[in-house]
Length: 137
Image (cartoon, rainbow, N blue to C red):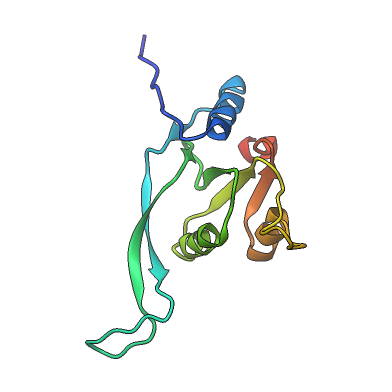
């Protein structure tokens, strides 16, 4: 009998998401794949060519990947400004990210915009509390 992989999750919500997937016999891998993407540097300037658009190549280690699926799942409790900028750059690199949020929080305390509004505005699929079962049909 093949040995089952054991994963070390970084948060209780990632563990909860993994348990949700496991209870539905959805095969996944956790933090197995990384994607490179170009992240724009604000107010960047290249001294060699004087270009104002400067990027830094970064690596995105995705939370959940699935066999025969061309998208990745990111379990998020908090989506701050830096994370939002990162995921927009990842999307520009051609990686389809779907989010499962612990709660549909506001972007910041006095904001009227919630995580769901941000996802809709930028074309990300999302779910609150647990992944959408339709994603796996």
